[in-house]
Image (spheres, helix red, strand yellow):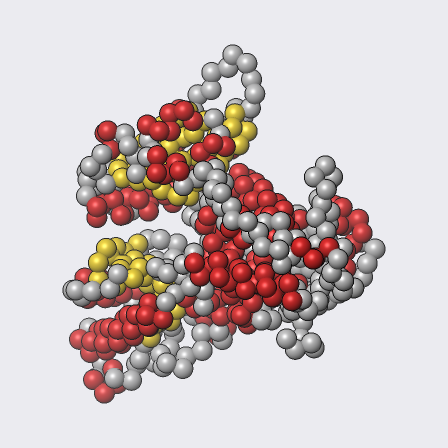
Length: 572
């Protein structure tokens, strides 16, 4: 990394170089991730490249045909208007694993309308023998066509630029490209713009990518990977890892994973996470700013996208989903500290918690449809509304905890056998009370009503579509789930740790190197010795953001860290 270049809102916490043991831990982590399928084979990578090439050709052909046959453009001009496919998300970040989907964007010149995309282009895709399981979601917050192309899942967005021509060299990171665009086009373009900006904001892309692969696998195994259900999606996890890379710019991937858990187990939400200083390009689009937008003050876990117009990528997060994630961050910190000390292997970090033994009470949401095609659409609509059920349950005074598992299951209940269906399970803890009957009928009815109203509004409802929500005790789970599904959540015997890390207690620690002393079991976990040297989020150098929260402490820091921090100068 260029020593003169500071990434992020503040200076780094530690500039320590990796030791031999750090490199060995990173090698072991890389091997584990390869065995877990977090890396693509060359053949799969080449297949994706070929599919994107075919889609790009299809888009350019479609734009030319529409230009001539619908827009009455002369052929010689239609040949020059261009159009292209751009990627974003995990594929663009370089962290796609085996079987991962591709997020892509169709970029068209100004004379091609969104209605053209969702009509003539949709019909063109239907004619392609390579395309299966296709559906359009035109009324979504970010309109999308979902499909499989030669077996690869693709989410294809659309953006119409205010340009006569869209050459291959068009620069989407230029803010002026957004001029005179509508909100939906800007949101569609934001995927590419944010992904590219994240890559520009990390000091070492190789370490960032390996650490992000590890965090994504951990989040999926621990049931906290789902933007639609109120956890974090891929871009949010990428931004948290990128922020960790900024704070530890010379760290190797294994250390970054440990520091990821350290930083975000101590973070005092709702202090925002920024990768760079926010700015307003003055193009008339709303940016995330709690000083101006009242609704932004109620966001519980703001992680702010680095490209204009800056948005909170976690607006679906609720009190209960945030609580689940914070608990998982703390658990992850304990495990990674043990790994660094040679007391555990990486396998322990990626063991899923036993969700189906954690609670005595569960709710199961079941979405049923008549045909697989109907179920594909119904599944997405029901899943997008489950967060309304979570919010309703959070406001029920009889309920202490709500915990949604984002995995979907097939039910063993006889009435659903043979029907296309999916089910989600919510763990519920009730407040202790004696001789009180708890009635969740109202919460469930509100949720079901929201689903049916939305499906009617979207004209998505078809005969045979049903959504049911039932109360289930832990001992009744075997009536709904197969033993195979339940076995997946049982703790597995861990491989014996290697001894490469046993020397760590006697290893000399560099002055600015994080301490890895393991906390005593009976004491409060020790905070790394390097933490008081810099603000964890530093993402408050714009003090007006801090003032918007009316917080005398620095956002993002736990009180015990703040007490030390406030006497220190804050690096800019």
